[in-house]
Amino acid sequence: MRKIWILFAGFMLVFLLITFGNLRIGEGATESAWMTLMFGVTVLSVVMLVKNKFPNKRQVGISLFLGLLVVVAGFGIHMSIHFGMLPLAIVTTLCALAMFSIFKKYPDHALRLLKNDSKKSVAASVAIGIAVGIVLGVVNLFLAEEEWNFNMTASAFLVALNPGVYEEIAFRAFIYALCLYFLKGAVNSRMQDFTLWFMMIIPHVLIHTPGMFINSGFVAGMGSILVLTALFGFPFAFLQRKRDITSAMIAHGLVVAIRFCFFGIPV
Image 1 (spheres, rainbow, N blue to C red):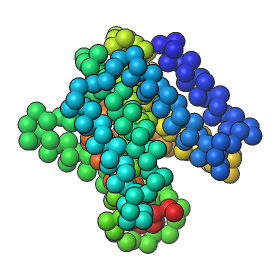
Image 2 (image 1 turned 30 degrees about the vertical axis):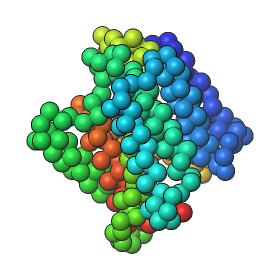
Image 3 (image 1 turned 60 degrees about the vertical axis):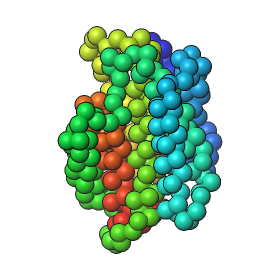
Image 4 (image 1 turned 90 degrees about the vertical axis):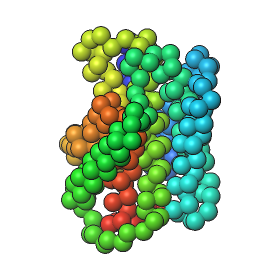
């Protein structure tokens, strides 16, 4: 576990420099935090692929398909290929490939992409994802301090594919797989289990919050971390670990799509 927490400590150091120091990689603190985590998972996914080799052909195909979904999300913005999505699609594909390669090596604690034991099982995953997404999406509306202006469009659901797929694969499922690799496939203690939950939730939550710390203060920033952890980070991680990754992707994407329908798609 030492390697896992050392990596997290390194991430936290950069996060603190971005939030409370003068380190700005992109246009703002929050964007810099996102770029930092994206760079980290990209490098680590390549390292994992070198160490564990590529997964089987079917999993390679699935990984490419997940990356393609992120590309498709760009059509919701300009109704054409949005080249800003291409780096995210590449990261998604690399992280999916690395995730599958690790799960192939340590199958006992592998996350399932989809519980497809039967048609009922597939339908259950979809239904659970939709139900959780609607509930959390409504909660998210009431938490927002913006005026509602409902306008349901296909673009809202297309663009929501980006966070639904990219973030759940690169910032949650792959990080879980990476931790499992460092644990050598063994989850035998409460601390090991806690580490898996923590790493699936907190890094992804933290990258949403630098702007809150800077603009509203430390207390508001910590409050934001707690709210995001309880209402979004933990439920999506719970779905991944207790159901499958697909249900989490559906729920996450639907939360974002609902937000876009009421507040518009950020340009």
